Image 1 (cartoon, rainbow, N blue to C red):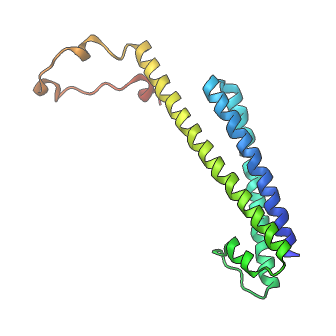
Image 2: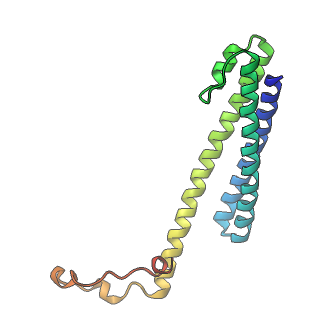
Image 3: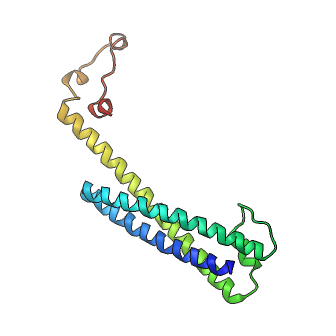
Length: 167
């Protein structure tokens, strides 16, 4: 019984991670197109889905614990799927669990890569906005290009950029 609950939880996790991948792809497009409203909508949907993923993960942990109890073993937090696959004696179940674990692992790695890309795009967008605000606010005065003696500028305070000072 615990094995079937585990497989159901892994299938649900896989579907939820595939939805997160779809959100990450849409988020990338929104970042590139500078669509802030769409980006906000996607982030809100991701937050709701993340709560569901946490619930499903708790279900998975419970299913693993049930499976271990069925095998007369004590549940441990460090129990791995590979160990569970070795314990299963039915080849069909072993194959199903291996396939689900591999697919979920692949989905998680793809999601990590997309999240890294989106973080870089967000950082570039922030840097571009900071630079644009500095240009518009005149942060780069002519005095920045005139030579000053280092001894004279040691007492001068460094001017904060507009974006930094507003935050």
